[in-house]
Amino acid sequence: MFREIRKKTVILSRRKPFKKDAENLIHLIEKKNWIFFNMRLEGSNISMENIQAILSEEMVNLPLEDMMLFRNLEDLLDAMKGWAKEKAPLSRRMFGNIYSILSGSEPRIRKSSPTVIELSYVPMLSEDIEGKIDELISFSKEETFDFVKQAVDLHNMFIKIYPFDEFNQMVARAIMVYHLMTKEMPIGYIDIKEEEYNGVLSRELNRGYEESGLYTPVVKGTLEMLNIMDNLTMDYR
Image (tube, rainbow, N blue to C red; front, side):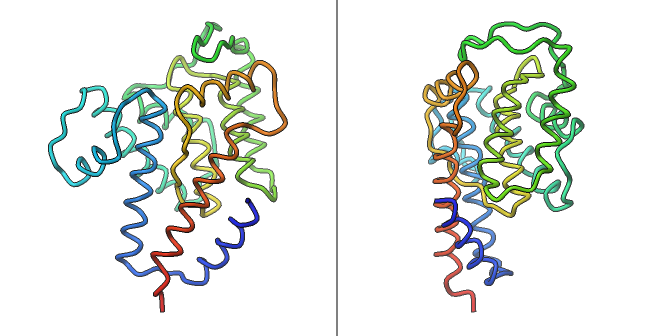
């Protein structure tokens, strides 16, 4: 399936620059995908229709915390697109910025190793965080054929480190998506439910697997978005 992504990417690269209306629609779909899968994985009951309505500046009755998360995710996506345009590498500063945009506060590195209940996981000691973050950043710079697997591995590495006192899963997903953005991949919808997502992470954190259970949903979502882009840009000439 990853080879299909490679092939589709070559086809689309020959059509660039896309027409403005197609490009705007692609960006809108990406934004909806980004907000929807993140909010659903954080336990929100928001629907894609709700997201479309909010983006169309219609009134939607949502809990205040959902609206705050929605706007924070919008802001984070804008920041990530700016970083990708500048080809900014992953860094501690970027991780802190992601945290700050999501939380509205300065990043707080955890000082203890409390059990992460939903993952049945006890993170590494806080004194080991710095060295493991350096390893993650080094790994992100390695050239690999399957950059989707690399992106998923970066997500899992960050979860394993669990450096912040909160928001670690969302920061990890932002790192994964950002890495794909640097490879000029679109943001697809990652079709995995919260319970399944936590189950995948729990199994991998506590037992380890050669291939992440998150890999297939990410590949499928990316390929589906590339197919949408293919259809939207058919009349590129």
